[in-house]
Image (cartoon, rainbow, N blue to C red; front, side, top):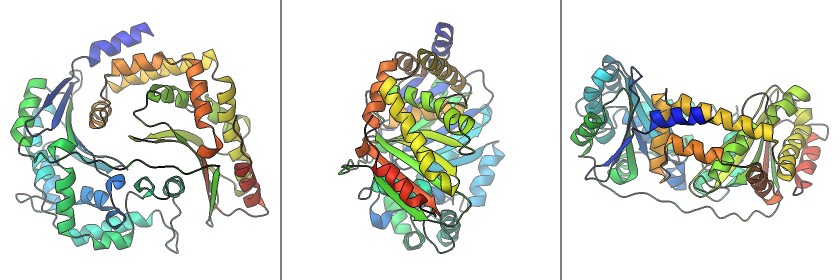
Length: 439
């Protein structure tokens, strides 16, 4: 492992950080072995920064930014300009941040940076009614034939955060989307897309001095603005919660969620390793137990969603309706066992090795490396891949056991089922959840 850590250190120590006069943080992470450059803007924007009346506006604004500028008044013009430079556009809105990026040959980076700044800073929000139709089609993907929400991820967040924007959907609903105006878009854009609230990242085939020069040339005119904040969630949960959403389908979608630690917690690196022990391939505990050993479902997964001030460990599975209770029992028992005994030394050593390998592999991906640095800087958690590797490697089995015990408490458990539970399966599942006790 020392050899791997040394390789990470050699290839990750060259990143540069600069701050423009308007407050915009710029990070350059050169990867000279690559043949493509990557440019990305990370912004503190998303549903957690919205009011109920605005819900979905951040996501809709993401769509509208690529709709045109004064010089390139239509989305086709914008796409053609980037694609003529050898690149392609990408954008995504999460709960608490948005990312916009372009990947292209290094020799066209200068032209692309100017174009990228134009799109991010000077949107004209043309064809708003057309884009509303597109987004409303996207919203339908999460609804049933009667217009009811059946997306298990959205519903589980509503269960956990009933009175907080972290429980909002990212897209909003059709009524809200159709109410959005250009004036609302301009106001939201001004509030979020500014130097104090964003991070610009260059990675891949880039020269640090040239990249910072391009950032100054094209992004110095971005308004300074202010950094947006939001109120932390206050949890009043005292026992395990269960919700069933009936839906006629071939399987029941299960979400077994535990409230966990925030992304900025001192236990964050332990959380990384806990998740690798639980679900990092088909030989780890979750898949081996539920699928390989007991054949209860085709696939099962575990993930961690971390926010500034909260976090969720989320187990997901699609199961036969009659197996919802037993699969939930297996998942909760698995975490409880880890809370009692911790991982084996063999499990922990494997998790350490795989994490180091993933850190090294990230150095070959401009997208992944930009995300690592961009999100880290955006939320005041900037570290190098070498530092991340060292901290995760220092996590002990007792650290993991103690964190599992902290998380695996009844007042942190939220279980959601979307499906048709008949012949008493709904009662059996509810009994499993309500009967859950601390390990």
